[in-house]
Length: 434
Image 1 (tube, helix red, strand yellow):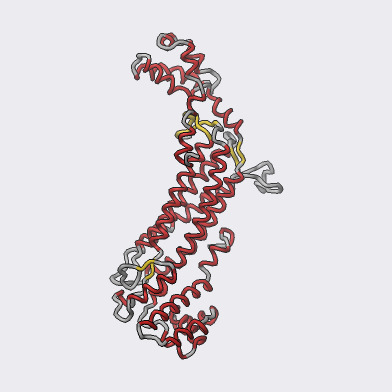
Image 2: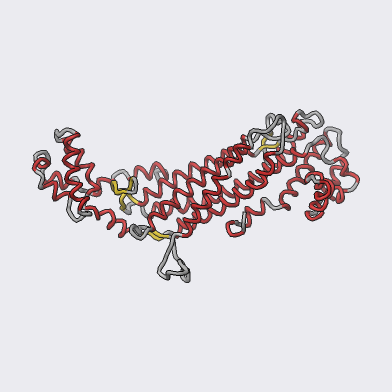
């Protein structure tokens, strides 16, 4: 996590101040619940809220001596609260605080990421609607295939990120869990109603069964979802990078006034933002495996997961937050060249209509094998001239083809509108009937 790829709101979630504030709320709410259980006097619980506080530097100072972060926090808290602090943390273990806090932080992070995805979805929808009928060639294996529209291309990404948003909502729900069950999770020294009270106050669900820690499959699912979202970021970024290649140049990142693309070559306008997004996506995905490996802990607990989560929690969410915000900006300002899209599509002499001619020949009684042979032998002549020959003219001059299809029928096979007749259907499926 470095400032270059960080945004303040997400960074603040992982700050010591926010972490210790959540710790305090967990302890204070738990103390409140213990009043009803007759474990804590009411005035002691009130004192925790009234005088409770902490000092980050003081906590760090204490931890350097005691080598335990929760004990250091409780000691600092006691220095503010006074004698009543002896009632804090009754029947609890450190993981009750750490795991429940992490759940709060992850839900806070998920809420920011959901807002990021809403911005990206809005940008994709706006540009898709704008270029609903902007014709371009579809490519398979990087090679011209058949016509589509740039709007349909963007609609595929919209649908993908909409699925990702649903995945993130589910991942947030899975990780939004509170566990305050004491050592080894048996509630021996703390009543389950304390857990229920804290969960309600923090907007979490209760963990049905914990050991001394929450089961880490929840966290693995959360980070796996981050990895899937990052993969979608990279897919869209890669598409834009390909479209910006000089030989294609159907779209490019916005190049702002005063921006410079190369220290050596003043003419350069490089896809630096989407290249950056590709790298950030790789980093996010790389953290998924450690999250998966954290699932397997020893018996009721060990802390092999702890060091990993202290790093990947901030790093993954901060990086993905930055990436989603950057991608939304790229899409919103993407410079699109419809004329170049049309010119690129037409540069291969009508080869994009080959399938329709193939199908028409089969409908006219020619076997599929023969129809394929007839169309391909003429298509290869166009291919070998780099589009200088014309497929329609060659087909009209081929007696085996014209024996099955008239010139008029062949000409009708080269109608561009044929390929666009279901664009509205696709848009209705993706964006709704309206």
